[in-house]
Length: 312
Image (cartoon, rainbow, N blue to C red):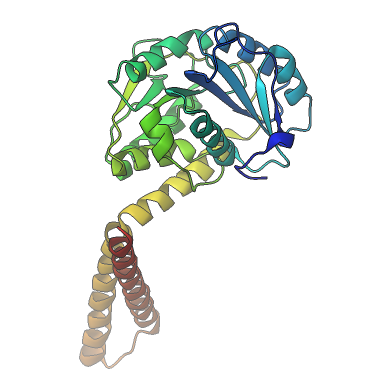
């Protein structure tokens, strides 16, 4: 199941003391997770003190994540299989839309984030000052981020900022708060772990106000996936987002450059043949290749730009 849920997939544990006997929750903390039985209980218990309801989206875990989350007092929504963080976030947004909550907080299930920071994220949303609040690891609060991770995150942030035309210091932070307008508006098409980058692109397109607040982070366990492989997947997905948003720049500009270099290389081959009566096969093949690829890239950019303009 990817993003939808029914009664058989939702387990309602005891209500938070904040909401017991009050009806629909005003604030919800959603925890997308996969195989986090070690930390999920403490995350739920701590988060319950700052929101009206905690939901855990168990993305096909094979351990006891769902059971521990239920016992800690969360409402658990289970995916039948592991379909990725973006699908889990979509499920959280669908649930939030069903409840009509005023604000939704996303927090990771590996205890890297401090639930004590939730009020700091919620404040701008509840006061009507922002639609998306990003918890940044690189503002005033000193966070112990490994150097290689910090470097990768800054590269991805730089790339996302350029593509989305929205400047953040931490585009990859999974600790975020959303207003009802954002909950109602946002739906994610990306798969895997590039959903944070997609949010930044969608925020610009939907004219959502986005701000950052400082948060702390602590890496308590070794990463489940290779940080390099993870970074490359996000990098690749972000390039895809940029190519769809700016097809003329992404495809057209390189196409024009390759076409120009190919024509110049072809002219040199012809000029050399006229001068020396020798035909240089290698440079000629290179010229044909550059002209062909450049033309295809240019027309790809033009076609995608036309399609994007049509749908807009």
